Image (cartoon, rainbow, N blue to C red):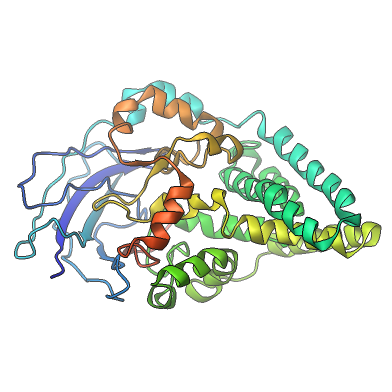
Length: 403
């Protein structure tokens, strides 16, 4: 018999800091509340639905509307939250509503955190080196057999190109040149895009803003799998195929879930990428082009680094939507594993996120975390309770202002 429990919370937020909610003593039949996530800067009330963690139930529940507005006190914004989780450890006969008390923000308690909101002084040189390494690899693979070309595309190029996509993620938060030089960040992201083979950087920036502002927002956050993905990819074999095809779903899902008008920067991104690809083809033939594309498709598919796609927001544990990973793969992924810290402080570059945890350990050390991205992929494929449906989905109001 399926069971569920509901946790409704209120918290106050500012753009650069997330309040940590008080975790009181709960009745024994309730689920521990998760740490709430940001969802729309103009949202005073919201309803939330959750993808069912099991493929045997391809739907989500509409749950309680949020309660009345809370006074804003000293902060500028008030945002409501309602969380519904399907959890076998909870009593299905009762729905618990727990009011959460706001506490001090990280930034107010630790002013040193604000000092970390500055550009990464090394990312420009790191990314430039990685781009040059891939250009050199294009020259080296021009004479390889197809078998060895694909091997090196997975083992080496896949790591480099996946790391470059995460560099683009970091740069999308203006971490290369700072917020006062937004156009430089956009153009540098296009430069980092070159070895990926397909235009990606500008479109990613356009949609990633919504991921932070409307985390799990129905029709807004394109990181949420579609109904078809949740319905079809529900067996181990199909979930394995879903992981292999992840680059295609991430590329095509925005066109279906939340299509947006093509921007001028996206056109520039496409033209620059096309010019680079034509130049590589003219110099060294088709094999370097295949190497770059294979590096991207294989590296973003069933690859150890790709475990972060699933590890970040899939509900492996009831009541917890976002997870961090503190393992060694952070060294080559711009610390994307520090994901709870990143969502708390999106303007802090990845290189400084470990310092956030070091400065304020009481906000992170007690939270569930992943220890291996490979194990994340294994559990996702073979655990019946996991699948594309294992994501929180919210109804969010559009913000009036724009980032």
